[in-house]
Length: 219
Image 1 (tube, rainbow, N blue to C red):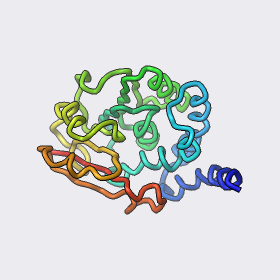
Image 2 (spheres, one colour):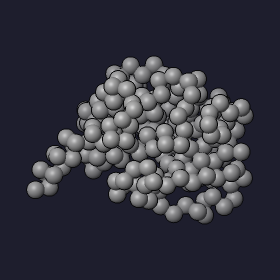
Image 3 (spheres, one colour):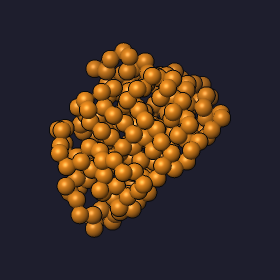
Image 4 (cartoon, rainbow, N blue to C red):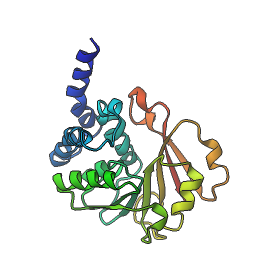
């Protein structure tokens, strides 16, 4: 019974993206819906997504990454650094949705960057550059730094606080957009920047998002 249910979920997952992004072009939808197959193929060689999560990749990885689009529609020319990107989240789904935005995806693990490069190449994402690097070693500056809870917020803030461009070009101030779950109020206490917290379940109704938040830190 569970196997039948799981197969039904997997068959219906493309509709999940179309459900929340009916305005997305067919080219973007086609690339987003190719991601599960590409990741399943690569996961057999290099484990970048857990076996449990790979069955729910549209919800737990793609849609979760795209929750950032509920806060801001990045303008062309925006520069974004994705720190600890792993297999390419949230950077790859965002790069698909915003082909005019420049994405720099970094991770300290080389085999994960290999997967990111392969998937970006397969999807012809010319706006993605992937690099094996530690965040604190990056010298460039960006409009936004995005990430999915690679470490606690004070540590992350220390890594990237000097990598944010001063001039804003989007509808929200430049800064950090951090996807995080659970209770993290203590982590915010001593951070010197302004803090805006958004509940993802306000945008997506699936139970997975009940405890998920987007933290926007900015000056």
